[in-house]
Length: 357
Image (cartoon, rainbow, N blue to C red; front, side):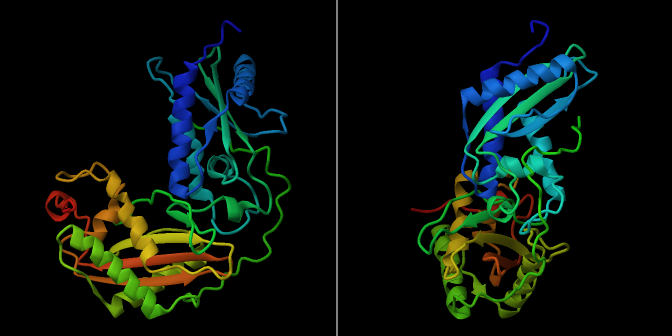
C-alpha cells in the first residue's frame, strides 16, 4: 500500500465535488454532498485498481460508479479531479435527451447529473507505472432503465413541480458568436427499448399566445428600464421564426442554437409531470436575467456565462420575437430572437449598463 500515491484527499474530493455541482447546476439538478464513508469505499477500490494497474468496475451493488484512468509522459503534469469529471461529462455529445437510451454508452455523463442522486464519494491512487486511477461512487445510484427522461434533463433546464414552485438552475451560454475506455456503467440494468420516438409538437394550449407574448415583452422592458436602455417591440415575423426553431429543437429533444443565425438568441427549457402545468411569459425572462449575478460590468467577459442576461438588456436591440413548443412528455422549449443582435465581442462594456436604483 505504501507504494501507492494518493492526492491530498480534501483538495481532490472538494474539487471533484465542485466540478460535479457546476455541471448539475447547468442541468437544474440538486447539488451533491460529500460522504466520507462512501469516499472510503471509493478509495479502497482506487487503490485496488492502482495495485493491479488495470481498469475495471467493482462488484458493489449499493452505489453508482464511474472510473477514470489518466497518465502523462510528463512527470510534471498533474491530473486534476476536474479533468476526470470533465472527461466523464464530455459524453453528453453522444446522449439524446428526452428518451430512454437503447444502449448506455454515456453512463458517466448521466450519472454526474442524475437528478435523484444526492451523495458522492471520491478516491484516487497512482500505480507504479504512474497512472492515476480515480473512482467516484454515487448514492442513490443513477442510470436506471425507464428513468432517464425524468432524471437527465438538458442544460438550461428548469423543472416545474407545480404552477407556483420550481427549482433554479444556471443557464448555458446563449448567443452565436487521457481517455478512459467506453463505460459499461454498472447500474445500467437491462435497458429497454423506448416505447416511441415520436414527439408531438404544438404551441402550448395551456396559455394564451397573446398573453404569453405580452408577459414576455413586459418582463423584458421592465428589466431594460432598470438598466436605462430603450424598450423592445414585439415583431410577429421574429415570433414565427423563433417558433420554427422551438419546434425543431423540441422534436430533437435537445437544447441547441440555430446555426448561421442573424439574430440574437436565448433558449429556455422547462419540464413538468403535471398535465395542467402553465408557463408564464415572464418565467423565461426572469431566469435569463438571474445571470446578472455572474456578470462583471464595465469590461469584456472572459466567457458568456451571463449571455442570456446581457442579451435581455443589450442597449442596441430593438425588437424581439418569441416561440414556444411543447412535447407530449411535458417538455417546454422557449426561443427568443432579438434584432439587432446583442453580445457583440468588444461592445459589452458600452452596451451592457449596470442597473440604476
